[in-house]
Image (tube, rainbow, N blue to C red; front, side):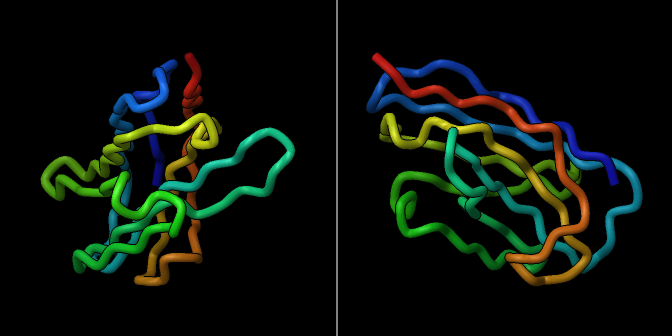
Length: 118
């Protein structure tokens, strides 16, 4: 499975941004796609995940501000990020796992930088 993430950039606090991750290759019926992020000097953390069955999970810090969705026909997952804060600044990575576990992934994308700054 190959993952191509896009959509990062510079945005002002309070602004919005949408990340996309297109998956290609052998996509199994049962799978999970997720978004992680890693800020400078911090560990990588799960931001949001969505299973092929439609179950979603969010980090507490983004709940109510971010929304993960998917286009099954295009094997693409989106992360709509609203009310962005400077602490959301990080490299965002998409991930794919061959199970319904939201914390175990087999493939990773290259990362896209999100910078929230005035």
